[in-house]
Length: 129
Image 1 (cartoon, rainbow, N blue to C red):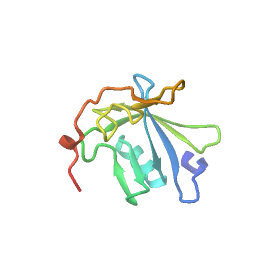
Image 2: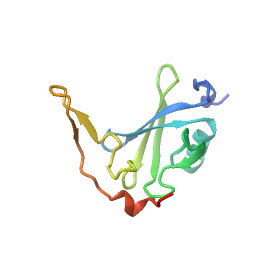
Image 3: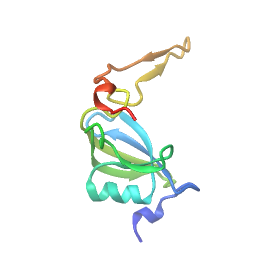
């Protein structure tokens, strides 16, 4: 029995994966994985996910070149969330930020502010579909 068999996938066979930059501890993104994308991640050493909107597999950086090199995979006590520590090459966010969590809320007045510098222009990296 593989450790993957101990994971608790949802009714669609998916499990959320929190992607964390190993060197800083910053959360870069959250995405969905299924058994096959976990196996692909292990085989290649790069993160692979299941796109719920496009209904297909994708490797982080397949279009942009901003890949994630997997350093560690762990899971929580309930076995229903993955934590994947990576070395991020380039930016993680398709909007051009290092992390997808580039917005924060001021708890005093409810205003949303950008908390990171945009590092790339997405139009320069991603082709129009």
